[in-house]
Image 1: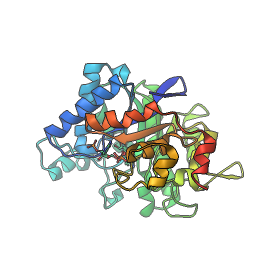
Image 2: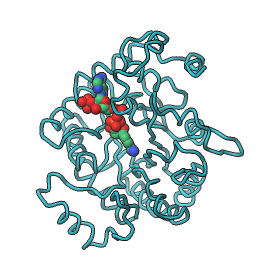
Image 3: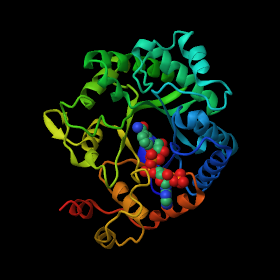
Image 4: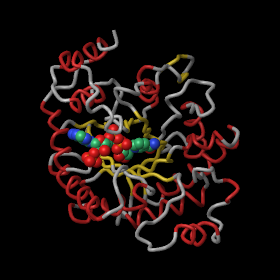
Length: 336
Ligand SMILES: NC(=O)c1ccc[n+]([C@@H]2O[C@H](COP(=O)([O-])OP(=O)(O)OC[C@H]3O[C@@H](n4cnc5c(N)ncnc54)[C@H](OP(=O)(O)O)[C@@H]3O)[C@@H](O)[C@H]2O)c1
């Protein structure tokens, strides 16, 4: 396993994601075995979210960390969607009313139709619940989950106020020793052009983090999709930094942010779709290896997250570690 150094941490260049999968015990068991095996093979980055598999993914990771040791995992989770707890045995409507409505944690008028929410009390609730699910007293990275979804419903100033409120909660968690870093995990926000409704401007966002947490603020991580079919993070120059137009990956490098790529296999869709000429060019036979080679060789990528709920997928994917990443020149030649 190759590692990237970042602010005193060594992060594996491939991380395990836990988004997809059914809500059954069988899937829990497979994730448990896969993450355990991943740790043996040198993976330390593990990513989840409170709403993934309705809290079941967080609980699996909690069991893994209890067994293997908390320090073996560089753990990220997220909050942003109003979560349900699949293990609560409650009706989802009762769960929502009891936890969010009657307590005033959520103002229903501020929810998006998809159940997205940004607010200080809500993020605090999710953060505390994640600690409980994960059986830990600290989280390495806490992501606001797809915050740009709010921009479809509220204006930009109101959106930035909401971000500020959440950053205040997260900086407090850092001061309390319950969190190391925080960031934004996005789907559209960093892949669309300036002027698009859901566009996220890194300069603007970091200015707010600095207002809240000073120069030493803890907003240090960004997550966005990047794969053979979605390469805007590298190819679209949509961030303006000190008067220069940069791609999101370049801007993150400039601003000292570490990047996790999500959907590194295009949510499994690369399989069976990689052109033979690309395989020949990279000297790799398997679609997954071409896909991972592309992501890990991209300048500016920190860790490629791959959803893996089967040991055989993990072991197959990690075979890419036997190959050197492409150098910058080889990588750039793919775009010619
Ligand atoms: N907005 C966001 O914040 C956001 C959005 C999407 C994803 N993410 C994060 O990024 C992680 C990765 O993205 P993703 O899980 O959506 O998509 P992905 O990593 O592109 O693909 C995961 C899918 O590929 C399958 N797979 C993995 N290795 C394989 C192999 N060798 N052969 C065949 N199939 C294979 C997995 O199956 P098995 O599970 O059966 O192994 C799973 O169905 C997520 O798990 C999540 O942590 C974040």
